[in-house]
Image 1 (cartoon, rainbow, N blue to C red):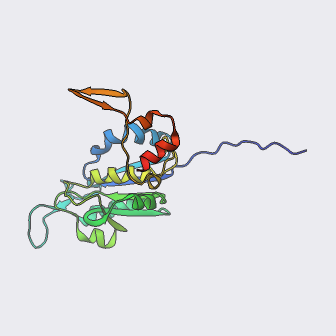
Image 2: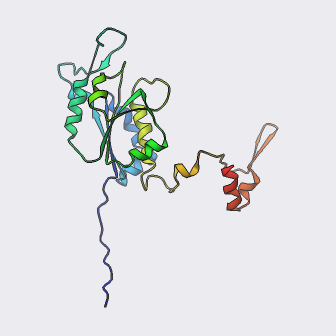
Length: 222
């Protein structure tokens, strides 16, 4: 007689840990405690660790930046507190350390999917006039840019990259739809079927009301 299989409960592990090194840790509070991120953290799909670089600064004023050698405007994040912060995290298999930079490789879906295979991502958020070049040379595995524009810091890029990567983790989205399968976006509509805007009548395309899923799919692909 064959014994029935016994169902055992296994503790779900975090699929991805995201560590963000920043001079302004409170920036992340509201965004990570809302919507998809909040749910993913509760379901242990994601784990976030926000590291305050000032905790690794020396001196009375907890200084993490200084004037650039050779002169020039602004201040530069120092290599020492970043090095100490990284050492405090300890070693972990399948870790990727990323520095945000305007000269980095452009973030796209292919990169996000590749990064989703790691167990831990360490994101270094620059500030002020930039980060000491020795961070890029010796500490970061790669430099990433989210576009051809300049921001005041790497905190927003860290959130953008985190969400783009998280979308490839099973369970993060409500639907298992691949970004690669969609091949870009298509127009979407919801109720009401007809909306009056002045003298105009804005209507939902009839094909979307037809219930014919094959025709709807063809329309979306076009």
